[in-house]
Figure 1: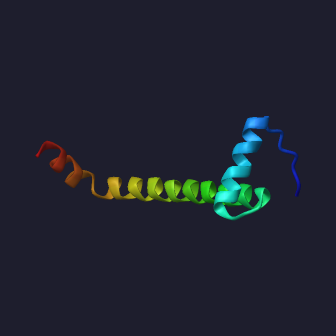
Figure 2 (figure 1 turned 45 degrees about the vertical axis):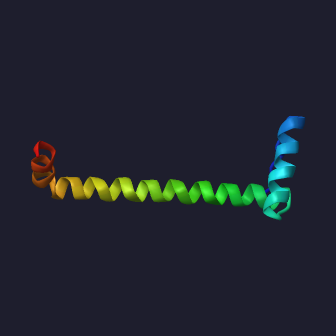
Length: 68
């Protein structure tokens, strides 16, 4: 899949600098950013789901700790 990304001159300069610092092409850099953000989203979702399970399972203990 390909996309056309319209950037201002300033944004294009920033992308060039960031990609250069990372030692990547602009395309590789954008892909790496997308992958990192997706990984963070998945991790946050995982934590939220499991915290909800733990909270439900340990609700009595959490209430006692809250009052301590």
